Length: 589
Image (cartoon, rainbow, N blue to C red; front, side, top):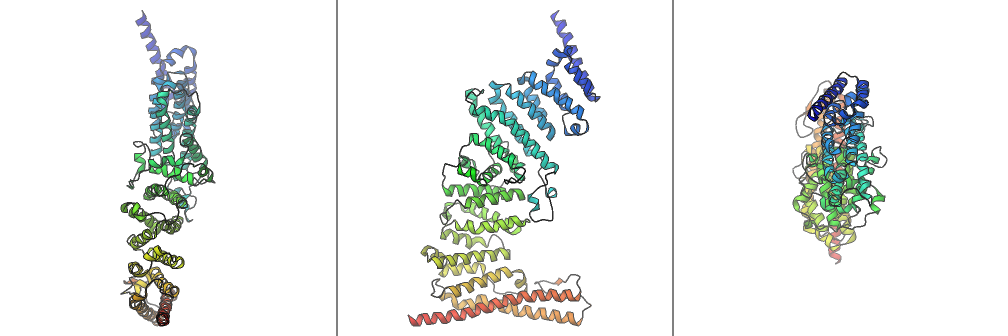
């Protein structure tokens, strides 16, 4: 008799499920709602939750929310009731599976429902929350990130660093993170409560799962947004930081979690689920910490400056390696801020692996020279001398001696020459014997020879290597004027200065000036024809220009030649004066 009753109930239950599914498929949400809440179907409903979850889940998507809102609301109400009334142990995994759909609206809806399931199973929550954490991280990793087309103004410098508030991708990121924050809040509060419901033997795992997941929330895609204090998204990041702060009192406690391999994985987000910590999320975490004076004041534990230096180098390296402007910006700002906490001339070069140093400098140089964003290039230029200044004189010399191998760009070589000049000036001004050991005499000549190879110049070099030539001549001129008493110990090498550095420039200027004047003469004689001239070291056909524009083009090149020639002549005069002064110094002594 009981078997017949069970079979009858199963038939009614199955018919009930089919009826609900039919109403939803027929877009009759009101009938589905009434059927579910009909008291005569109470037992059938309570026995069908597992089957109803995937049926209702089909309609909890962005498409239905936008196009069939009544159907969407009906499905959400059904799932919400299931989460509150059914056995959470039986429905939890099925709800998680629905959240894996990839639809942002569905994920947010399901996560809010999943939260109530977890709150209703305190004894299992410590172990079970890890599945929800994995689902959250997986969804974040798979979300779209803003692209340059989503910027506020593509014509402005640095525009791709700031994204439109009404950009759909950005709105979705904000929506998803708001739900994730709301999801974790009751569980974080639970851990703060002395009467935490989670069993003691599960609490450590429970705590670690939440803390690691919150840190990963600071990675992709949040790190792509503007997280400065005056931005619309700072509140999201700040809420996550506050919750992480419940578990991590001193941010420097997380430094040992930094990956120091300097591997620069192309798609770092792929590791977010399989590893406990990633350099992308830790990079964003420390960027936010160092960008907030209030949080910095709460740091009590003091780590070795050298250790902090190396850890932040690794974080910055991985963020720079993504080649994504918002991540590069945060890497540079973080590194710039940390450099302010490292005393000058305290880092021994040999205390950091050569491969680590060369990789980082190569990445920083690439950003400074080749990045399309003006703001990023400028920030890199500011960082370079500050970075150099943290090393001892020996380290500074080694970095500068090898820097010209990082890029052959003439602008970069010229920039490095200004750094050499700064080190020479400091050594002469302070008379520090350690600095003079590396930035005077034979070592200084060796350093100059790395950058000032201007033998065999042709007119092409005057145009494409202007920065390098000017910086080289300015360095020589500075030493000749500044070093009246031969403190730089360069007198033995002065005989070759004119031959190696001045005459090649003057000869190239003489040749280039004659060539450009001939071109102008040809244009004046035949103003209607386009001419082919060797103006940049290879045959360049001038673009479509009027004769007047072509003459102006030649005049601009002549102006640059005159500027270089004038400086070379001035250096030559300084050399003559230097030799005279030195002879007088020798005679007087």
